[in-house]
Length: 306
Image (spheres, rainbow, N blue to C red):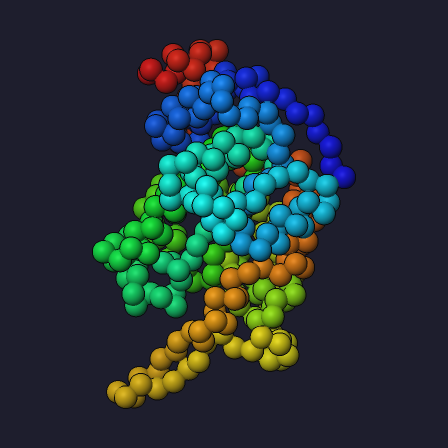
C-alpha cells in the first residue's frame, strides 16, 4: 500500500498563481483556482492520488485501487453530475484534480467519437479545419470536452502531477488549436500500443500522451508491437470490414457494436498502468518549456494584477 499525509490546500494558496503562470495556464483558469481555494463549501483536503475521467468500466481505477492508491472515477454513466459539458460537472472534476497529491495521476480517456479516423468523413477535422464540422452537435461537444480536458491538464502540471490522455491511434486531437497551445508550454511525450497485447479481445491500436516519458516507454516496450498471427488469435475478431464501393474504390467501415465495445480497457491494461504509476510516482515531471520570470516572493494578488 502507498501511504501519504492529508494536508490542507490552504498551505498551497501562495503558490497557486505563480505555478500556474509558469506553465502558461489561462488567466481565467488561474482566477477560478484561487476562488475555489477560498470556497468554504467544497472539500479542501489533498487526499487523493488519482482521478480517472471518462472512466467507463473503471479498469484503470480498479488497478490503482488494487495497489492501495486512493482516488475517484468520473463518467456520465455513473452520474449526470459528472457530465463534463456542464458547468457543475467541470467544477466537480476541477476540484478533484486540485485534491490530488504531488506525484499523483490524472487519467483522461477523452471521448473519441468526434476525433477518430473512423468518423473523419463526418467530423471533418483536418489540418486546415481542426475544429471540424461544428454544425454537428457531437463535433461541438467534442471541442468543448477537449478544451476542458486541456484546462485540467494545465492544473495537473502546475501541481506537479502526471497526466495520461488516451485516444484511438490516428485521432485528430493533435490538430486542435488548444492542444497546440498546450504543447507550446508543456513537455508532452507520446506512444502507441495494441490493446490486444495487454488482454484486449481485439487488436485495436491506441495512443497515449503524457508528461511522464518513463511510463510511456514501458507501455511501448510491453505492447508496442503485435504480430499478425497474434491478432488473428484474438477472440474479438476484426473491428472493421473492408469492401469496394460501386465506383471501385476501396473503403472500410466499423462493425456495429464491436467498435463501441472496443473502447473499454482490459483489466490487464488497468493493472499495468497502476504498476507503472506506482513505480514512477516519485519521478519529477519536466519543467515548463518557457518558464515565466516571476518574483516568487510576491503575493498571488500582486502577481495576478500584473
